[in-house]
Image 1 (cartoon, helix red, strand yellow):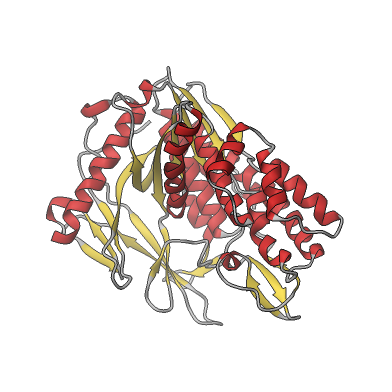
Image 2 (cartoon, helix red, strand yellow):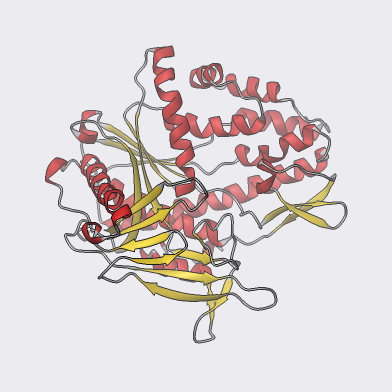
Length: 439
């Protein structure tokens, strides 16, 4: 394994995918993250090669990001305060919304040939992971993308299912419009999270029990349509078809993530024991939902919550502490259940958008311990930022490939077609073997 912690700037690169109005093909160009003074990459984004010499508003945040990443990795790897400095360059995202002043920072680190910019959250025990002797890593990938799964309404209009979390459905749904191929979000996330998780786990002291959990949301994704089905806006047959499509997609993405991790794990060259498991926190909820839909019915939130409560003691406690008012509340609680299920250290290796799960779990953690008196896990998180970004038509930079799906192909500066899953594979070669078999 190469040394992931270097005393000089890592310096990597990003790919910017430029949106274009139809019928112009979107473009792509490579952005080098070079040494020298800090420079803006686009609205709200800066590359800071040396936190000590960055713009004054960014210095403290960038410096803290490097130290936090150093402490987290040192605690996980058992090297304590003697851990060498991580790479000093940092990517900073300034919150550009009116009235907001927050800055998120991502420290650079190289792990087994793949470069990552990582946001660290949480804390480690004083003596690191050895204190608790158990570590569970959680990695998950959402299904589809905002543009890849849509409802057909009013005969011809199409509405993103993901956006129905917050937006009303104004017309009755008549069918589904689902893209059959895996999205760039699914491909890139599987590669990136597998690489990061495998490399982190490989360096954990051998006396620590390590489990890698793959938490691809299945029933939680099915429940996206529940509120609208309860209101009669999504017929039971359309809801049932959605559940079937989600089950198929889940199996495909879960297998992809596991295969990517296995390839990345082999690259680390480690022989330490590790347990690998797939997570499904809502099996009985899915059974309740699909049985009702087969009868042309939509179960109530209370019926779904009762099914979850019957699963085990943890679910009984969580529903007591945080009673779900909607099916989506139940879905969000399922993510928290995975974080809080086992004592020891829980490490999320997730997309940056999933920080909300960490916050929710941290909120319920102390209340759960007070309720039960049982040990609860120490929570921490490593969130590797993707390196294929989108420059939108308005000039903004968007790294969330779920929200802004660029499709499958772009045109590079030499007017050549670039297949985006291949581009993602080049960014994370350790996990990219047997790429074609899962497309």
